Length: 271
Length: 287
Image: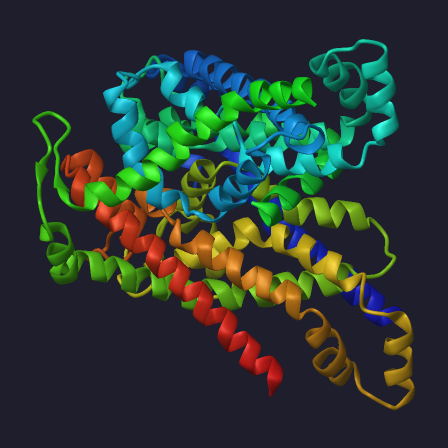
């Protein structure tokens, strides 16, 4: 390409990248600005202060919400990995009547829009008495159809000879799964782990339905309630609360961005 | 293989039970709820076709559907164009390629709730960042979220910004299959860059475009947290989305039967719209 063209391309890309990054930088810097300064474009605050964070921490249980989010997202991710692998293993490597039906049902589940089942799921959770409990946030997410199909696809490619010789050695099916399949399946397991964790970490509609008690709220829900209810007072305080949710994600993303992109783009396409 | 059969059943039983409880039952119960009045406190009562007649006459529901179509009419084309432009720009060996890609993808990993709160600040009429930038070039101030005609387009632009990185990845994957030899051959024929794009790249990217249209449409029908946080559905209910209306009926009015009816109707509308889009794209391709 001509030199001028290349320069123009890089300038355009830099400008585009800036529109994606600058708002987050501005958000971070705004949390350190006193109320009068928030509206300015500058990234470096004139009078940096932790006031916004102090106010936010004092007004709503954000520490607790952070722990809730970590607990819920971790539980869901561990469950989806372990239970999903067990299911995928059975569907990929064991022959039993009903396997085909299970496969079809899993594909069908992915085609049903979530809006269709949202209200009946909500009424189910109400009847089970799970409102304002971690059960409501975790149990409906224990299995994930996308994860099962992804892992099944991978497990199908592992040579049968490995399974046969392991069975010859008297290994149980679960031991074959966890000591032979899992070490081979690290890449798909990582992909499943990332999109499951991120999905749970960022979810807000479901918690808004099933949780009203601030002590059970996850971070995105508390953040939403806090920003909407006027509890925040000023913009800087709202943004400070948002930072608590974003910073762990951005740090993980900086180190693992290739996996994040592969995982979240892949899950979206398959889901 | 008796043992294998038993192991198969044993290992898949938890999932089968889960599917029955959290997928099959809610689907069936959604249809049952359509024929019920239920406030979750008193016993549910049979509603016959009440919910359906109410839905058919409910101006608020149809306004929400209309709002969603306004959203889609802006969001889907904008999403295709922005994703395609960024993907084409990145589709060559270049300096910092991974960085550009990561930058465009950044909003995809951020919670929709955070993006909504952040853009609420960016769109603020008096102190917002966007109006501050526009003021530098002598435009504005634009009442982004308070003008009934601008609010939904503003939300559509924001959602496009949030998701574009995801669709860039889809297009980049598709661009790998545009053969270099074809590019060069058509270039030798004297085709301009635009002609190459129009007659070679764009047709070859059709499967990706179909995917972008389908996914961004389905995603658009799920619009909830953005109006919930940014506008509360206003001004003049112009940003009230169908999911927000469903949520309001369930959570604020305790009308489970009617909320479920909205959910079923939405599923039908999504299915119909996606089917129509696919037909139209198929016809356009045949031309």
